[in-house]
Image 1 (cartoon, rainbow, N blue to C red):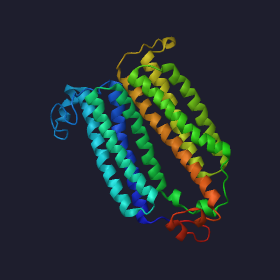
Image 2 (spheres, rainbow, N blue to C red):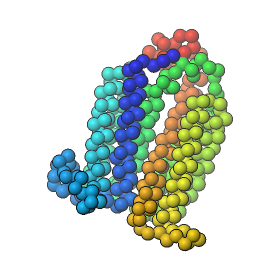
Image 3 (cartoon, rainbow, N blue to C red):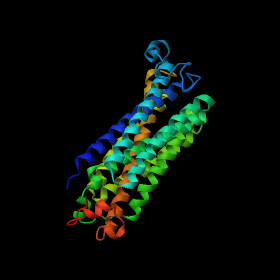
Image 4 (cartoon, rainbow, N blue to C red):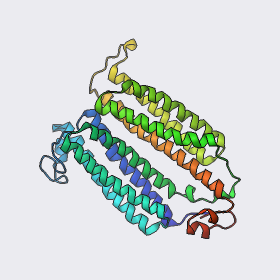
Length: 327
């Protein structure tokens, strides 16, 4: 079974949207690392000038903070335009009501995220910056779920034509609990970065999140489902990268006396590790959610594999249910 060309193009556009979303996320993480959130005292203007007419590139050497913060603003505007395109594309190409609603929800969230960023500047509120960063991770995760739902694996008849793959209660519990704990860990990391406290709680959360993540990776691998195993591999990779970056962020910020290394605040290596660590946390959250969604999708498919139309598959899926496959 193959998806239509329109489905493939919608999926590709969704992947593009997720990739573009990384631009304001990465720039925003760098803004936090540099403590440049108040490089401009006004919003939506920049030093009283139109955001899109501001001579941004002149700040590259003259004012690093303004260059990074304005780049973050422009990247946010770009993802807003891309999100509008996602909604238009989805309404034209996609028949599933929940997917159409998800696209609209993504655009709404992006708009709210922009307003929240503006409020952070106008109110000079670090708590708003914390919420702004956490909300960004949720938007990114949602976009990737949208991309998953429009991909060929989601719509593939392989899940029906092959023998049922049982998703155990323990696997479903781990799949749901892990992203919740990972998000909580990201929140603690936000407290450290934005508000300057909860460092030890963040370390404890890292241990718990790592243990749960490893457990769900092992459980997913043991399930035998290729769709889950591929996500487990991805989660393993981003977890390993995140642990390395976390160690680097710690050493470059607090030093490492046994090796005689003394941390220098705002040194290039410190900026790199702290920023990359923050961005990688979003990838860990994203992959854990991807795995959770796949587990729940397989669980639902297995429960409805014998009577798909009776349990509420969308009309086009019921119409396409031929010989044990669903379009």
